[in-house]
Image (cartoon, rainbow, N blue to C red; front, side):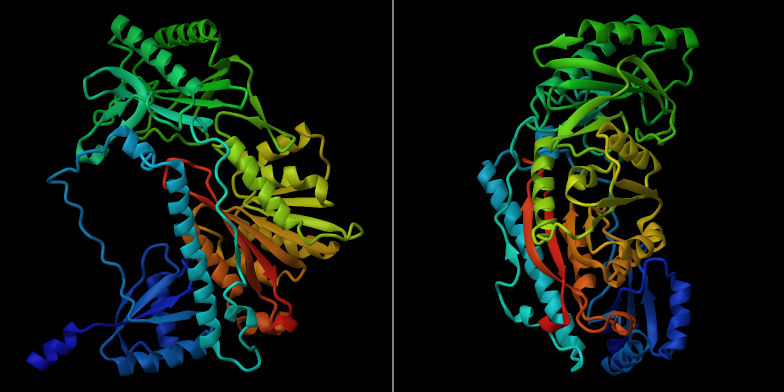
Length: 547
């Protein structure tokens, strides 16, 4: 009995990577039967939304038998032995964590010299790139197929050019977009600022943004006068005007959103809870707010140009895209210039929060995209995947014959089309929907019309869908991918899928060697004083002769 219990307590795990996040546990059990390993597997863990599954076995021998069957079933899956599923630790709320100072919470690196911040970010991103090369090499060596030999570049330590980190052109007051929560400080004063501490831990306070380095003088000034405005109305009529309370789901003032361009022309959106307030008091509030905007219209810190009012009654401050929005005063949009192109900004449109940093990042990405395009007679197509409001494609439109943008957000596509019209451009088209669907529907038809196809991808933090990665591999006309990422981990995962040995389907359709290889990489600091960092990776198609 002791020996049996000892064997039972020793878990033998196998991680199967790349099966797909859409495959539920029940379907994976059926696959185990098809692979004839269902009698060997004692336990299965399929994390939610993960593309991996973890299989437990009674012995190393059982696991080895299963690995043979799994590889025969699908050689595109990656197998890792002795990797256990991560155990979730139960969070205890008995002793809530004391919140950090607001400076530490919003700008955790602000206490460090900027050169030290850059060095830390550069080291972290560079490690990710080295990990990518090691992972690609491991996959090729594991593949060990004489018909598809391991590429020679994987044995050259200088094959990937990693440039020095690109600093932000401005380090303080660089943000152009803010959301200030309406609340009370720990001393009870009404203020518009940053939420301080975790709500679930019982902390409901808000701290002033006046000492935060990344906040511009214009945004600080607007937050200050709006705080005074709230205090005045609450003193006058506390029955109808009060701070929204998430515990009781009551109250009026929720948040104020401030956006501005580099000329400090400002747009303000005030979010309120319209429930339980008579229409005449809401009308009074609108009139009083417009009067305040007119009073503070111009100052040394900038100019107030646009005012919106958003109605939102749900618990959290994040409103649905279709939440009622009233335009109250001024002009409906403000405008920003990036790389000699003009862009329209509305309250909800996406735009990089560091305008000068974005300009530097886009300039670098575009220079890499066009680095080997010396033949002016070639017809070139730019494929802008996850294009947002079309910024990169619009900036690059003069250097290519056509731009195709793929974007899931309908409002972002509408903004992109408006920006195209604003710049009098005619060679851009946009397709709305999940990139994995629009890619397969549009690219196979459009790509063959051009001599050269360049892909620029700028996905969300989760990275690209596996069907988009497959499309990038299978579209023969694409020779180059410029990957712009806000998450180095998902970048490495995606790049590995594009650079690892081709599976049977790809070999059958494209021959050997037509995967990508990483050639250039750089970290770009778009967010000084915070932990976040953007990065760019250049991937180039690897011809068969390079193997």
